Structures are given as C-alpha cells and as structure tokens.
Image (cartoon, rainbow, N blue to C red; front, side):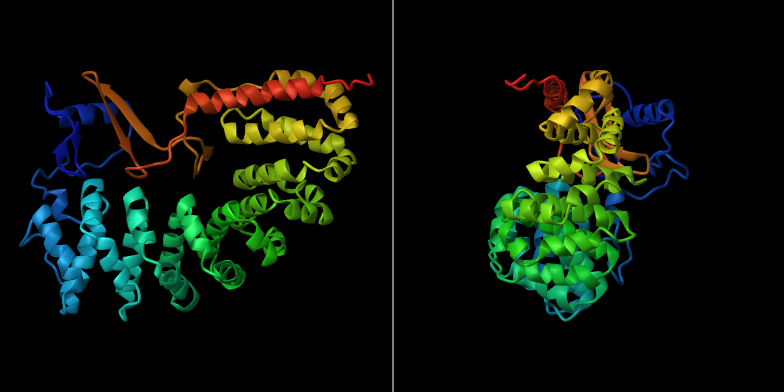
Length: 441
C-alpha cells in the first residue's frame, strides 16, 4: 500500500499500482478521501514539501535541505541559533516532523527534548506555545516521557505557564501536563511538586472551558495515584460544585475525578454525607451519553457502603428501572459494564435484590453482549455517541494487513476478546447476585 503522508510504500512488492488499489477501496467503501497524488491536476508537490504548519518567511515550493537524518541534525542545532528567525523556522519544522513516528524517535535520541525545555520560558510567546505543542507529541512516546521527566524543572515550568501566561499558551501547557499525567511513573514525579494540586484546583474555578476540561483529566490521573492530597485540598467540594456546570464535558470530567476520590475511605464517607447516590439520579437520565457513563461509573463507588444502599432502597423502582434499561446498550460495552456493577452492589440489600428478582430478572438474562466482530476496541467519543474503538481502516491485500489510523501512531488499544469476556462474566455475576439467598432462608 502507498502511504501519501510519508511518501513511501508500506510493502516491498506489489502486483499492481497500489494507488489504484487505494482508490478502488475508497470507492467501494464510499469514503470521500482527498489524495493529492491521485487527483487532478497531476502536477502535485510531494507532501514532505507541504508541512502542516508553515514556518514564517519561507517559500515552501523551494527547499534548501531535505528532511533526512542530516537535515534533522542541523535543524536540532538551529534551535539555539542566535538568529531568532532561524530559531523560529527550526521550531516550526521540528513540530511538523515529530508528526512522523520515525523522525520523532530520531529527534528524541538527539536530545531535542532538553533543547525544547530550555526554550519553554522564552520571551517570544510563539516559541513558548510551539514548544509546548511539540513536547505534547513527544510525550506520547515512552522514550519521550522518560527524557521529559528526567528534567526536574519541567513541572514547575509548565505550572508557571498555566498560572501566568495568556490563554493560548495556558491551553498548550495544560495539554502537555495532561499527556504526561497519563503515565503512572510520571504521576509519581508530578505529585512531588508541593503546590500542583492546589494550583490546578484554583485554575479550575476561573479558567476557560477547554482548559478546565484538560485540568480535570490531569487531576483524575493524579488522584488515581494519590487521592489523599486532593482530598486534603477540598477537591471533593470543588468537583461537587462543578456538577452544576452547563458544559457536559466539565460535568463528566468532574465525575471521573470524583470517582478516583471515592476509592479512598474518606471520599466514601464524604459521598455518604453529601448523599451522592441521590444526587446522581438526575444525571443517569441525562441526554449526554458522556455524562451518563461518568455518572454510572461514579455510582459504582458510591453504592459500596451500607448507608448508600439503604438510601437507594427509597427509590428502588426508579433507579433499577433506569439501570436495567441502560444495560441494554450493546453498542456501549463500557456503559453495560458499569451499570451491571452498580446493580451488583445494590443487590447486597435484600429488598432491592427481591425487587430485581420479581421485576427485572428476565430483562437481565436478555441483555445482549456484542461479539468481537461487531466491535473494534475503541473508546473515542464522536458525533455518533460513544464509539468503542479508534477509527481504523483495515484492508487485507495479498496476505498483507495494512492499518491506517486516523488518531496517531501509538493509540491505546483494548484487547477486545478479554474485554467482552469480562462483560459476560459481570452479567453472570449479576444473575447470581439476583438469585442469591441468605443462609437464613
């Protein structure tokens, strides 16, 4: 297959022109895909001469140096060129080149990360923003995260940009911090910063919506590593106030963060004191699918205590009816898994278990679990709802499988067979919980 983005073939031998195969597959799939190498007019420049972000004062139709290994070494050195224009052009070029995984790994081995971190607090705001965006791409690689976190001042530099800079740079720095916080080893180093939790909670209250969403994802990852510090900083009360926010992304992020806090015994006690199970009743009927999934995931932790189970008994019919209805969503295995877990927790209460046995046992047995052929293992939220799987385009040509990934070169892929087997096991566990009888009976 021919890859137009890298201007190279993904296999050595092909019986026919691979561009014809690409075009035939696109036509058969009725997929509209603009390929400059197959469209008219035929005289098209190579894509390597057309970067996604053009450097200033550069004629892209004429290049003095190709993007080979020698060129990458020179561009890496130009990051500290005394001429600011040359420095800015080099930064633009590196940001474009790290989109290609081979060039990104080569630049990481050239220690480009250390040069970029030295430029994080540059006087030019364009340089500060582009450095953060480039570091975000490099942080998606294990080698890149290792090099970035080896510098002790990276977290303090990011927090200085998040706290004091303009909103465009705050967003870029927040995106970098969120990408780093995805790694558990990096979370351990990030939490060593004494004031990072308090500063993030302070920025959540007054910042722009897109930046707040990123901060909530960062806090959720940090709270998963150490829930004690966020609880001491009153993160539970802050997240509870965010439930009233009109933006569903913020509500969903606040619930995901509170789920990590409720894993701790203090968080569970606060959830009981604030009657969180009753608060979440309105959210499991929300029109936004992201809010429903996050609310049910949080309810899986709030319904673990005896006090919450007896409170849920007061609205047993309403809660169980909605949860069983949500279990019949085979297109959303994550929603099924969380709803069934909540019902398992509630079945510890004898009255709720008897109600489930009398009214909903047949509906639970009829829950459909999709097969692995119907699911490709994604969890990306698109305009069609929560699609579980990345946008893969898989074709088998001459016993060679070629995958085009629209999200990136290193996505987080789920083992479909293990995940669906887990959903089936939880369903069987729920049926056993409904039919369980006490030794007194």
